[in-house]
Image 1 (tube, rainbow, N blue to C red):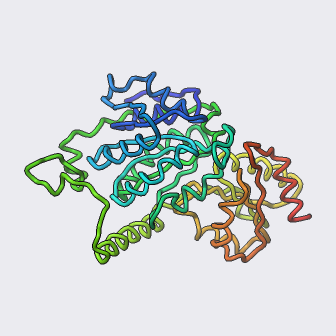
Image 2: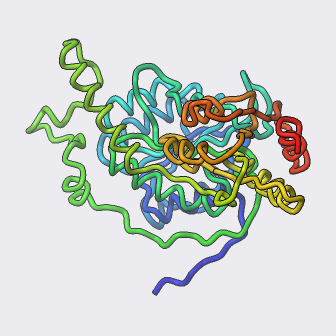
Image 3: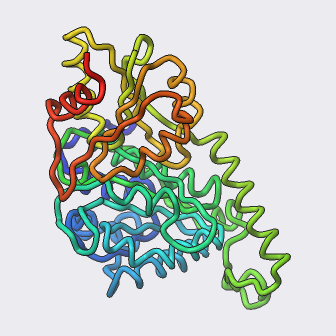
Amino acid sequence: MEKTEIKLMKGNEAIAHAAVRYGCDGYFGYPITPQSEILETLENLQPWDTTGMVVLQAESEVASINMVYGGAATGKAVMTSSSSPGISLMQEGISYIAAGELPCLIVNVMRGGPGLGTIHPSQADYFQAVKGGGHGDYHLIVLAPATVQEMADFVGLGFDLAFKYRTPAMILADGIVGQMMEKVVLPPFRKRRTEEEIATQCPWAVTGNPANRKPNVMTTLELDSEIMEVNNERFQATYRLIEQNAVRYEEYFTDDAEYLIVAFGSVARICLKAIEEAREKGIRIGLLRPITLWPFPTDRLEQLSKTIKGTLVVELNAGQMIEDVRLATHDRVPTYHFGRLGGIVPDPKEVYDAFISHFPQ
């Protein structure tokens, strides 16, 4: 029986350790703050000597995502990581991977923007991740960790969902979770799949076999509009299946809540502290934390909106997730937004004060 390992580490470091332990076949990335520790930790771990995992610093973010595209096409478990401006450079490649119906894992440790912005934390890439930052009608499965433990856990979860539904998955973490240190229980080691196992589990994969040319070609180009429509209808059917089966969220104090706060990532932790203080004063607030930003917990939010007086959405941005909250609740109750910009992180008192400003008691 494998011994449980508890380590103190950064969220970025947890991502790297979990990738090796999952049996990831390859990481292709490029350094950018605040996620550079992922690549640095992988280089220090030297998994090519232990598990056979390839770790390669590409010449750019564009190169790294296209290396992921190539690796994913062969059925390998491959990943990349970056931060906001770097993810912007990857958008074309991400769209290609989605169109190729290929599994992979992408990590975005968000920093403030737009442009080069700041190296401080942000949640302003919500639209880019959830609405599809590249061209065409596609979705990514988007997981939003709030703890270092979830940074580790979501590597395996992200890969498993990506392979189950043959679509890219993204861990969308704000810079706080990437940089903060907490205790984490590392997942057990999985064996990397053999070529025979990959061929059995991924019959769609490019084989490189010259005797059979068709599976040796991967392309997302289709010049026949009718066939392309059929392809897109297949993508949409997959997305509907994901929406039915992959929604994840966490809720606190919602049984008797008169009001609701909706927040994701590290901000949800700040909001929970504010809610605890509010409840000490007799104000019954609940918290809904979406874990999957896509698929979004629309049905649960709609249910909760029938029993509350109002909602406050708290984000480290100018107001992005609030659009999905309003769609889910049909604006049944007043819904307001509170956010900080430029890398400034609010404290619980600011969240409480924002709530009182909208919902005077």
